[in-house]
Amino acid sequence: MRVYSETKDRIDQRSFWTLFFLLSTSLLLFLSVGHHAKAEENQHVPQRSPFQTITLAAEDSWPPFANQFGQGISHQLIEAAFKQTQIEVNSLVVPYSRALMMAEKGAVDGVFNVTREASTEQRFVFGNTPLFAAKASFYQRKKLPLIAENKWQIPKGSMIGVIKSYEYGDEFPKLVKQRQLNLVTVATQQQLINLLLIGRIDAAVMFDLVAQENLQKMGVSDEVFPAFDNHISQIYLAFSKENPKATLLAKALDQGLSMLKENGQYQQLLKVN
Image 1 (cartoon, helix red, strand yellow):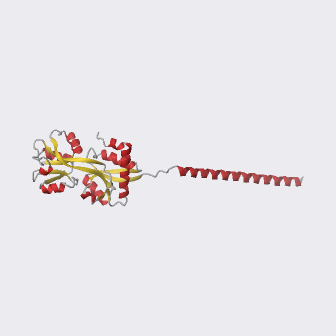
Image 2 (cartoon, rainbow, N blue to C red):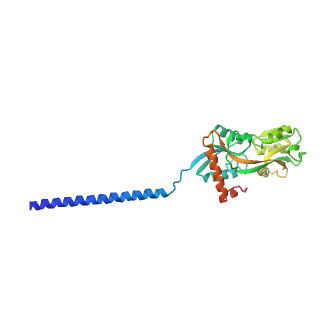
């Protein structure tokens, strides 16, 4: 009886270890196949890179393109274009002259609403595609009109109001010199309009959509009107030369604007409400 019991115990132990080995092998095989399938599945699923965030300086006094609340056409266009290329935008709303200075020093990655001309190309990096084009005109009072049919006939020595640090086209410095114009520089469109109304300046250079918005808000649309054109600006987002990725950001914006135009969003965003 004792021999039988020992033999039976050995058989039971052998069966246990055989079963354990089979179960372990099956489990390892199952895990291996599952891991391989998961890896193969991941290869076919495109991985979305996390959003990159950039900081831009946006001027505070150029509605309907950019206002003191961080709103306007430029904000909408820039944010939507960069979103197409997985880039998020943080905007710092400041006066235009400060925005330019911040971008030049590298405190921000770029600055809103810069005219691309000889003077700005020396200071910033630009892409190939403008945000939009904006026309500027000489504005005057109906009661005190300029005796001129175009800007080259403006009486010599006239007092002309402009905004600090704004660009008015490559011809403007030549015009000022040739007509011996006296420039009166202020910070906002409202100041320009007020100087016109009280007769402190003979004319003011303002971008047409911006002028219309401010004249309407101030309730003086019937008193001030555009006399003749100054220029048409190609308006860009200008990037800081201090940022080593400036050229890449400019290309990303170009790509985003192109995508917006293809899908029809650009035309919708550019509409003035």
